[in-house]
Image (tube, rainbow, N blue to C red; front, side):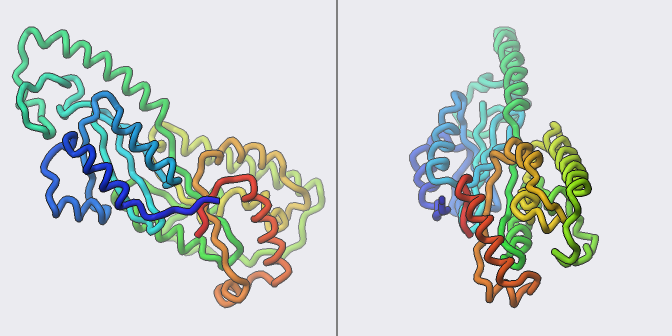
Length: 315
């Protein structure tokens, strides 16, 4: 079990050690905005050593790391336990046009617009090399770019929707982000009906198997949708994870354990960030009062069993 810990000091130390690679002036105002998640810092990282050391630094602390590849580098957004966002951009060159990398002859450490670069005949070879390197980089970025998946777990009334809304509001406007409930995208303009769980009996085996196939097809469609090129730079927050079908099959009127769905979810959600929200029965009873104490204990038992096999962030 892993716990997120404050990381502002760790990141500030990293910035201090590598300040010579910072592009532009690192003023107190810019530092304040950065710590408040309202701006990013640009680093010149031609050999890609800084980004690797930064990823290792955060990975050891089990932070949520969001990577977004673009035409001139890699942006890393890191999330701490207070949902503070820290954005660092590691650039392959200081020139804004990747075809003109390493053509700037000045000494200023800042982003250089291509208009300010005087191109000579001897630079044509460099431009050709930059063109080839850029093609390789774009191919690498397409292959390495993956969507960020965040899942919320807990019994009814634990606060899954509240946490997902909090994360969504934090990133909205900075990062492409969607909220999901199971395999369905949530639309803020639609008032969804409040369904009471366990109201109906489970299906017989035949209908239960058909229901599993139906759910599996929906999850497969979701997988294909979010893994297309246009959606890979996106965060997807599940206020109720698709794993809930396996953890609590009777909620979906299944009378068998959906192992086919399990096998696909192991593949689909293997790299997701999982939040397990634990709440006392007295609290969830006040909030929703949808499950009795017996069901509460059963769900918590299933959740503990599930998370004994997976790394997660406790909330």
